[in-house]
Amino acid sequence: MKNDIILTLDAGGTNLVFNAIDSHYDIISSKVITAPSESIEEFIEKLITGFGDLNKSTGNIARAISFCFPGPADYAKGIIGDLENLPFFKGGVPLKNILEEKFRIPVFINNDGDLFTLGEAISGIIPEINKELAEKGNSRIYKNLLGITLGTGTGGGIVIDGKLLIGDNSAGAEINRSNNFMDSSMSIEETLSIRGVKTLYSNNSGISMDECPEPGDIFKIAGGTVNGNKNAAIETWKLFGTVLGHSLANAVTLVDGLIVIGGGLSGAYTMFMPTVIEAMNGKFTRIDGHKFQRLEVYAYNLEDPEGYNNFMKNEDVELSIFGSTKTITYSPVKKIGIGVSKLGTSKAVAIGAFAYASTQ
Image (cartoon, rainbow, N blue to C red; front, side, top):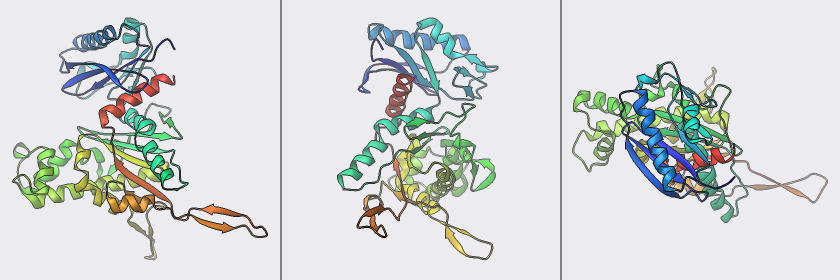
């Protein structure tokens, strides 16, 4: 590779945030352009302006463009499909090819949940937890990660042994299509999103959606720092956590790894994490009435001091090998931890974008 700078984009509903990132995952240059556009031509022109100005600021030495964009999409081909909130993408737009023709460098597109999870696996929760385990003399090593982003919508990503799961149809880890514990006819996104939180609070407090405060204020109401219906706010976050916990429990049966939460709503973790853990560590009931643990693993809240310490505790035992003086280490307690992004969602996505482009 001729250099180590990659151009990335955080495509939000309000702003398009362009970043130039080096191999140390440092942002060396940025540009912000307002996102709302009336046509595909106007939108593409904004992308060309943003990436073009950013590339010029680095001396035109960027070796790739790598960014997240909402689907449905064929991410391998870089074709964005019909977007509900951007109707001018109807029928499909070959965004990758358009940008490659313009800039003559490789272009890679993924969804935000995927890149967030990859960034956390490389430079966030995975190395952080493994380092802390090693420092405490714990031999356990984590290689797999389930990521979920909670904001305008619900996104997900899965990294297995350091490799991002894309899927045969670019549809891996679409956790937003999980059914909702509160109402199986709905997806979890109807609860685990900004509109979901507002709907819960509106229903719990008996006010209209027009009168409903934003999730940040609902969090403050629950904490008693802003006036409002405190009981309704507390119940809102409890229900939010229950739906999230059941969805994560279903997902982690297939992934068996750490879980990291990002997105704007993750900031309310103190309110919803207890019911997440409660749901994940709950029990199933057999036909004969016997109860057994829902998960083969035990989930720990890494944001809670007691949960963190119990997760870090070395509970390995040494088993004797019959007919020998040798022993073998056995971990009788299977553990997974759930934490909130310390990198921040945007930085994790940017790191994931850089890492993905670097391996292609």
